[in-house]
Structures are given as C-alpha cells and as structure tokens.
Figure 1 (cartoon, rainbow, N blue to C red):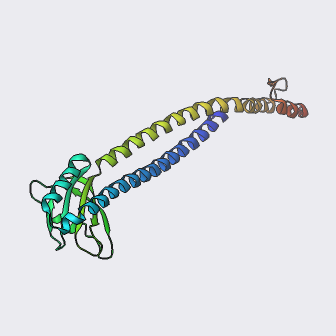
Figure 2: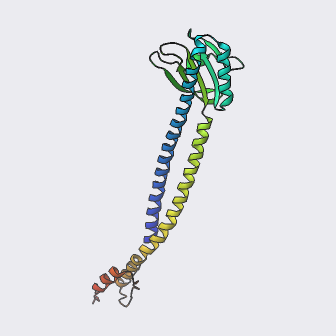
Figure 3: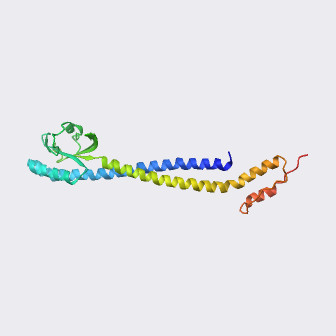
Amino acid sequence: MRIKYKFNFLIISLLFILTILVVGSVNHMMGEILEKEILDKELAITEHMACNLAIPILNKDIILVQKSIDNIKDQNAKVKYIYIVGFDGTVITSTFNNGFPVELVTSNMIPSQEKIAIQTLSSDGEPIQDIGVRVLEDMDAKVYIGFSRAYLLESITRITNRIIGIGAVILVFGICLSIILTSRMTRPIEALVKGTKRVSEGDFDFRIDIVKNDAHLTRWLSSVKPQKTR
C-alpha cells in the first residue's frame, strides 16, 4: 500500500471515530438539557395548579375544581390527564371521561416526607411523565398531572437528526481536506522512497525531481553521495 493511502486511512479513521464521539456527546448533552427544561416547565404548571386549587379543595368545591382542571387540560395539548386526590386519600375528580384508572393512584405515591413525586409510566400505550404535588404540606390532598412524553421524544429526535447531519458534513469536509493535504505531504516522501529504491538497485543516474518548497529534502539529498559498488 502506498504511503499516502496509509496516511489517508489513518486520518480518515481518526476523523470518523472523533466525529462519532463528538456527535454522541453533544447529542446526549442536548437531550439532557432539553429534558430538564421540559420537566421544569411541567413541574411549574403542576405546582401552580396545586396552589390555585388549595382553597377550593379545602372548601370541597368540586364543581370549581373540575372546571379548573378541565380548563388546564384544554389549554395544554401535552396534558393527557389530571386527577385530584382529596384529604382522605381518594380521588375526588379527574379529567377521565370513561372512568378513572384506579391503578394510577398507587403508581406514583408521594412519600410522607416529600412534597413532589415524578415518575415515567404508560397510559394507553403512550409514555407519560406523571407529576404529583401535595396541595398542602403534611396533608394527603394532591394534584396529579400526566404529561405526554411524545413531544420530548420528537424534540430529541429532531435534535439528533440535526446533529448527525452537521457531523456528516464536517466528516465529509474533513475527509476531502485530509486527502488533499496528505497527497501534498506524502509526494516528496514517495519520491524519496522511489529514488532510494532505484539507487539501491544500481541506477545511479536516476534523479529525483525536487520541488522548490522542499528545501529541507534538497539539503538532505545533496549531502548524500551514493558510492558505486565494485
């Protein structure tokens, strides 16, 4: 294999590995940032709702509570369901039209010393971010909102495709540049190897064409005085 092909293979391999590592790292980092940003927004919505519903829940004004959660769900397409757990630990109202799935009450329990519980679960085959917040501290009244994770997954997919596209462009540009530079860098070396081989075979009349910019190679060749074998 010629020297420049070896150099090209080495450089392209390094570029390929480096691109994969960078693309993977950036994609992972962007996914974590996006997920945290969305979770912070969802948590803010749930906490704000729990604060607004504290008095209606204390007054057992179920009509007002139902109206409030229906409005929140209608205004936010990412909200898949909302349900309210009263002070006695039972569900007092929800946005489910076809009956409340009882298993949700025990799927994301808030620990006694905590105010918030977050869990990823599945509802009707769709991944859901279930967030529960206590309405009042040390009391069992809670607000639960299930946010669809489809938006998050779609956003991560878009970011991933964009990063991969940018990485592919950079990789192609790097390969083209490496081929050009490697060809220029290895040309005098290949000429030297070829000349050395011809001289070693006894062709002492062979001359190597020296490029003007290869001053260091010229000096080295001028210092070499091949001796004829007897």
